[in-house]
Image (cartoon, rainbow, N blue to C red; front, top):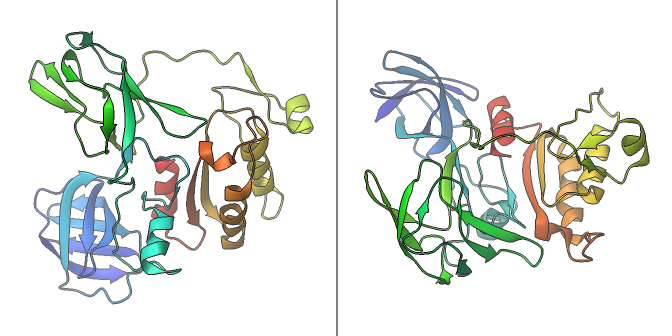
Length: 307
């Protein structure tokens, strides 16, 4: 447990944080504001706080969680709206109203909902990272594949179909270091890219539904595109159009540093949109991450990694 030495806006200098590491998540002050260590000199840490630091003063406690900023991946992500550190905004609104109480923490995924898991892998089979253990029908549009977590390799000792919450064990894996429980979710550090076996060359066009893009600036599935421009030039408009009409399986909309009214429009309109392909609600294959321009720079940066 460390203490606050100095406060300068969203930046806090904390002392006596022995054993702290770069990018560790810390809780600052009596309210437990979420922050991240961005500089270390001996036992003195510079912390970027993701919330308003009003009221934080020298001598307040600083608790190091010992973990880097991470997100929980699993059934329940789709149809959700998060902030940059994966706090579910709909849950926060239900509990706190329209204004988020500083330091409030809520689980990113529903811990009580039961998911129907269908096992595919067989007990006794040798499996490695990324191999499919089974599936969960997360929404009518998306079949969620439950896979062996990165680093997991061994023989399946137990695995059964049934209804599980995200906190229940669906099976066990016998690895070289002992038995490893298997669940519906994985926790992943946001600054570490997800591993891949190999990257496929982009060869299939992504039909965006916008003639000017598809004709003059075609984009490939698996590729990337950039829309530079000054304030008010329409970057957000084209981003919203692509999210609505592009030929994609899943939409992850990251509103990083956008104006509050633009993000409000997205949050208000997307839940009412109908998917042009399936004629079902577009939110059934969409995740929204909202971090507006009035948030600290580091919080906006975190939303990019979260997405």
